Image (cartoon, rainbow, N blue to C red; front, side, top):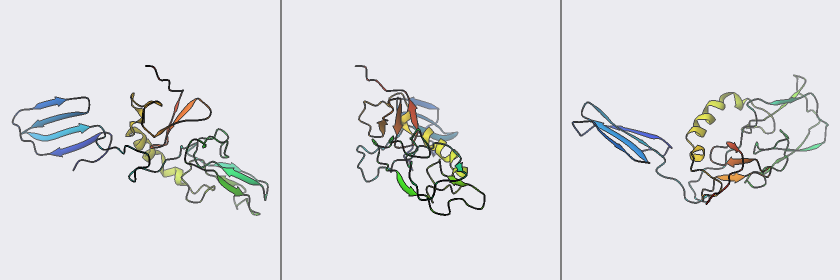
Length: 194
């Protein structure tokens, strides 16, 4: 019943009469006849290659947990909506996606681009089911993504640009590293020191 999570917890019946703590770099185990056996562990199963069939599709970075509102956009004008969330010119693409698998969404402003509210809301969370328009997904997204980023191994000290882990990408701006697993970015350039 072991799950693949960064810190999995397994509870089962204890077999020992005394408390036996066992520590290592990868797990902590405690057993007792008066209580359950607890095992805390780092990720036990992890795809070795980014093209592995079990590999998760890259997650976009959330630029903002709210839409950006435009009172009017030029009808017929073509925009490239950022799908990765990494652009510094949100909500439009600036090419930051180039080292990733993301591609911008080509969008031409329709004739009726201003709704009854007098403005159009463009998604900044990048999880809308109706891109580039905001559908309110951002309202229920923040807590789930925080939990996912906590359980992602990219936040550990061993996560560096020079390791063989395929989930890290140096962005063209030279100041951020993007994790495709949880969609988070780290500021600063990772440097390898032998």
